[in-house]
Length: 550
Image 1 (cartoon, rainbow, N blue to C red):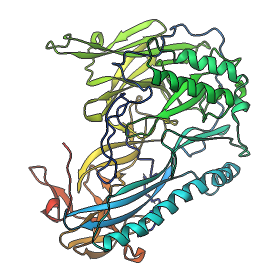
Image 2: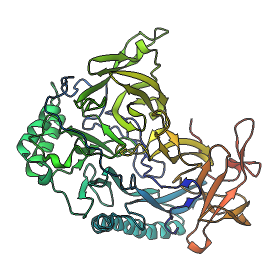
Image 3: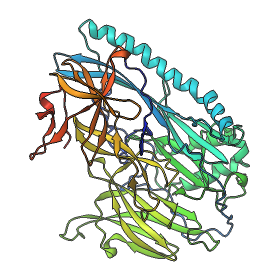
Image 4: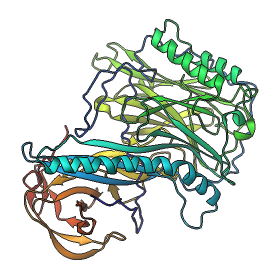
């Protein structure tokens, strides 16, 4: 069985093995898609509210006028450096000769830790105390099931594959507060979450009552935000359940700079959806010592009605940004239907049609603003065809908005907190099609994401080789060539690291015997017909079970 994967730091490449929970659309009643190795079938899900723009029952509209009761933003905080989780992975593969394919148990565990020399050792100790036992339980579940999996496979009956995950979403990670939510772990009931908030300096826990001064008032606030005329009984039951957990203080929560976060199940590739209740205008409900302070660069998300209230033009008063999408029949360039993105910034209104912006999506998912080295930018995240996500970027320029551009990569978290360092991923073709991830920043790039690393990484599952593969074993610390080797036919191999520009491809050889595992660079290329080649041979002639998407 494969030993746990260590984090690589080599050259300018920061292989922060970020949570690869693959983001998708936030539409309601959308089919739940699972990887081919899971035992679940694709089913139709009717879920609690997300961002379906075609729903007949939308959250109640709110005013676009910023509240008079404001607080002053203080940017005196520092980021801790823990912007998103590292991960380690483990794989237990077995080859099914009848299907000529590999089934696999896959383990993915988020790690929240600080590097040696960090000033946040007390916080690190608290995270180890509270989260490590939960992660260890997931690892043990994987290991126990792996023994049974291999025993059955060796008896000639290869079981279906399955994924085991310990997932965390970080919503604050600065020198005042660290706040995260466990969204998945072994034996966790679907739709349930565990939340953890700490004072960064001493690692002491922050309770619900530390933050909320009036549970009843917060429950009423929640009900007002989520009121939907004509809502069905399932929705009303969900609202009532959330309110009851607010009143009894048992609701999982996270903290942001401007509000409190509650989570709900999302049947997309990210398994949670956060709902923010802003403290601005409701300061009497909250202990305001936990809000208002920020680092130099930061991110603010919208509320369930796609409103953002924050001082973005620097005049000391709250500004309001409201983003929405409208489905318009027969109004496109060629008479086709279209989706129109509409933005209201303190009464300054623009829309994608009048601005000549082509919208490729089905509707808005959420919006956020980032404070960067060149000011504030607005990001409108919209769900698009084939579960892609389009992000339309606007510069907040005084009292107006200026369109910057669009990018179509996936963001790896709904808790993106640091504009200087966050994970994004995209689909790439190497040994089949896989999601590859890298670290990005919008600093110094006019608000647009810029990749910080040459190599992208993937948690793709292994495939069995049909033939021997001559290659070069590389160092696991700096990826330099160690020796020429041959990966024998019948080995389990998975793509691991890929340089998009040079097409350098590093693979990992997986084995029950840890001493037989190694990393290797293969001779990877593409031909004129866009066939993927290793040593000049088509990858489909080298591996069983290669699958390309699209």
